[in-house]
Length: 277
Length: 136
Image (cartoon, rainbow over all chains, first blue to last red; front, side, top):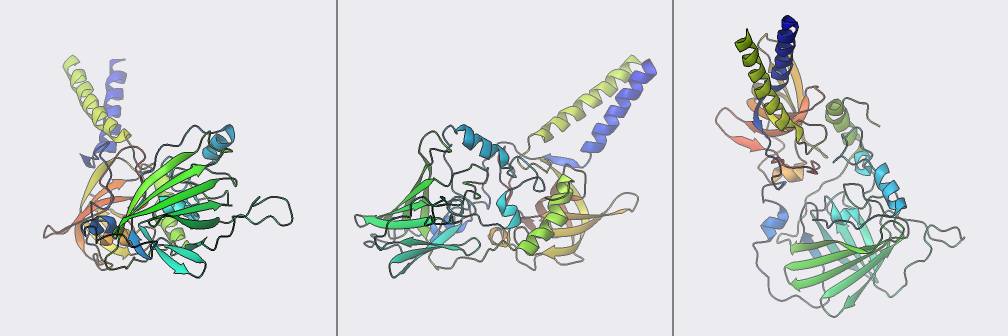
């Protein structure tokens, strides 16, 4: 009996030692994560001062943001919202191989996730009757109509004239005073996630962004989500700040499907030891 | 004999305590403790989205070579930390600090590499708590 006990203890010690031998330094838990050590483009642009007063009704140019916006908690979900959320396997909970995050396939993040996650920055570029918003990540863009048109109704509905859902939705914008630009968006494809955690939205979601140019170099944005099918009440998902990028040059960063497959094959699948989906 | 048992139990206790510190994972697939791999020989360095990848060989005490692959952030992210597409060349011998995969396969998330002259290139991940996002 005693031999068995000693053997068990030795065996357990061996297993634990073997599993631990290589570790010499523990990851610090609950440390705030700063992905690039305070050296984001946003941080660099934060030392440039106000740049003077904000020009009137003018947003044109490149704006640097955080890598990902700081998100507020979502309100209680409806049963439908919970069901959708449970079906979204984010890589914060699952390994990359097990995750079904659309990003894993380089599928479109869509709007508003491209404003909320892996954003780093965007540009506003005026065109006749609209403003384009061009995003650093994946070099995608959306159009915000400013010609007074109304948003489409019943997007994705069964009627013959119902507009198709879009990854980036349908957006219209207008100025409230000289410094606040308000953008309303509908018709967003339900396949997009709101955030990296996998919170969902329905085709009925209404998103409003309010951009306020505080001074020449500072742009503040509040985004609200109104989606009664998914959430029990409207909520402000983020209050973000962007800074005028001095050299007006955003780097290229594109999700390339073939390179993503390489990454999954070399790193992510072995890391979780299950075949990719 | 009793003292030997107590000694073994103490060893197990210490190792169990060490082990418990690995349980707080931010990234689902990786351990939360850094392994140090000295004399790692770089075999390939890819400069791609979504993650750059460092491939390297490490010999164990018996001379067996393990082929490792470690991810770091995307080029825009690690550029801000001093990396370039030419930071690592095949044949470079470095010390690798890595969060290995819990699966036991020779892959992981790089913490940093240290060159023989002490020059250090670190990744975007500083460690963190639950919900940490490694997609940078």
